Length: 171
Length: 124
Image 1 (spheres, helix red, strand yellow):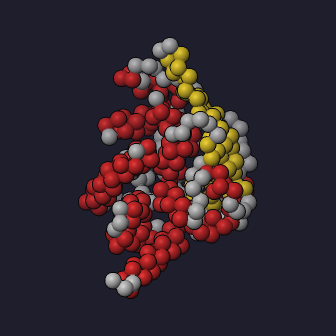
Image 2: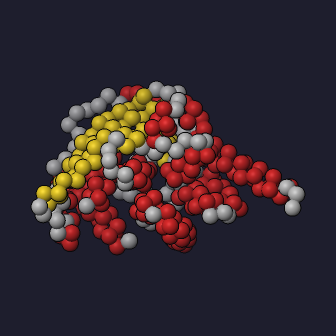
Image 3: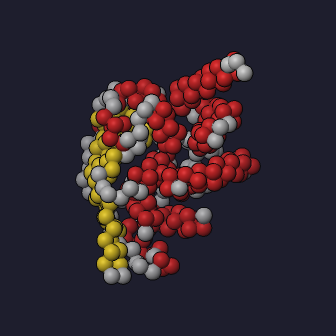
């Protein structure tokens, strides 16, 4: 079930999801980051697993777009050595200070606002809501996006793949 | 592993159907699922270390470019299991492969070497 959420996240990040609203990307383009630090997330949900999913899943689709993504687990260790364990505390730090510590062009902050799996008899509906914020090394916000994604898997795990594809195409 | 292959296939099939085939730049060797498993159960970080070692060897044998961060992630796992020398070797490889990582890798290598020096100078 959660695998499908991975795919949704990946599809969103790789730009395979049709996005009807053209966002103003001029700040992002002006900053033109080449390296991105993905810091541990802020989790506003009760799902204790969600931050692990997001942190381990984000690097691949971002790196596949050509950015240098700082190794997330190494970055987590470095932050912990600085006394920063909680996502909340990390997100409170001055971005410029963090960027300098890692020598990163930009920092990606993710807040997980919703992570629901509703079990309805034999089907499951998963709804996730993320807030993304990217800040350049001088502290300017260069991109932000709120995203709600929903997925309804078939309860029969052996035959889900096709459904995953079909669901993906709706986005 | 098998299910991850399936996952990748599904994702790429979906991408093609969606009209935006995304060619992949790197072979990740199951990085994200190993990391996720390790976060869920820290005992599985050892499996990730072995998995990354095998994957890096495989990338070398087939002359593929390692994905960004992979050497450093292995270095961190070495460090956390007490092998500082091996960690430094991996951080060095990361730095040499990715100039973007130079600032961070240099700082980490410097700190580790300093730490080792203090250790070796300490009275026995």
